[in-house]
Image 1 (cartoon, rainbow, N blue to C red):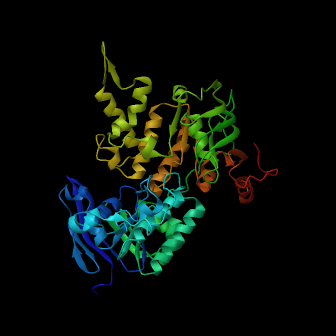
Image 2 (image 1 turned 90 degrees about the vertical axis):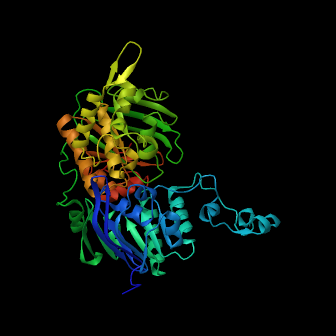
Image 3 (image 1 turned 135 degrees about the vertical axis):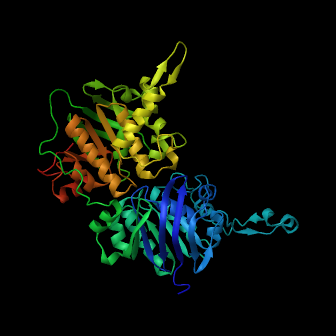
Length: 519
């Protein structure tokens, strides 16, 4: 019946040239419902939201087929401001906040409280003065923990008048476990007030916890819409990827690594001045040919270890790679010693978003070692044939979902961007690979591929891998040993099958018993 749904999208079809990215997709969301939109990266979720919000990329590429209704009324938004006026808001994974503005200014942006002045009475409301008393003073956004920034995003959207539908795009991807739990509770409170929620996420346990219904897309097609109470995580995963999803890291070896010479990595008393992730004296060794995990709570220093070794932040202490000392003061020394990195910040550090897939895969190798170049008397030019062959090989090897090696990386989904970061690191032909948060914000299919490929690199090529992750279960499923960081130091190094209590004690910086190795 009319008005039963806040949002109805029927028979949506969208193509970019000959590439059909959505084919007959339908979706409906009720008032006060938490509706999960699921699918692998590249399944069509982002395109569906671009259509809903009237994004320029849709309009400038020929529009779309199908029908969109808001509360029973057909709409075709020409711009996101039209969606806002209709009561639709979005909370983004990548924060859309202005660092120099206060919390209040970010929440009120575009809807500031103002009072009339003599000029505004003559020349219009654009000359109004901000009501400083009404808009209370507050802390600035810059420097706030990511969890706080996420809640500011939500407050900004809820503050909008007549809000009917909130789209949450991977809202917990950058949050700690406690922050994520708080956010899920906030989402349930919002829904109880009658506001519909579209929940886009790759964290299936969160779907099972709070969602009422779900819609699953795969390769631009609608797979199913069903009540969450009548499904399971296993069934959802199979619908998303079109196959049974096995346990990652199932091939973990009983004995970790080999020791025929110096350790692959020796770290002694490492100190790193990274804001929010300071390291205050970490020491550990990584054996050749093992996957060594580093975990711990957010802000305890695990990310700082990788950034310190890579030379991105001021660091001191001793770091050796296969017996060779690293110069921590020189950015690039680790790369010279064949240590490759996959950053936790793929968009800010790991990628050139306006460049092609091929360029992103190869630019580090080109800059560091002059590979993929033809040298002439006074210049070097790209060897296009060699570059294309390598890019196409990596695209096939890592199943990078793209329209070709020329496509700009910024237009790809998060999972495919992460695969390109890995491809770029592997192109460096490393002896030691350091991957930081390799599965953050990516779907279950891409996650399985990346983690199983890391296992393959270890088992078949003997590559040593250091994996830093907030997902403890992932570390325990994949790694030969797991170090836990607390207060900027190594609180314990444990076998992956150690009791849960020992991991919990290490995260709390409590001394280990006989089951764990203390630093």
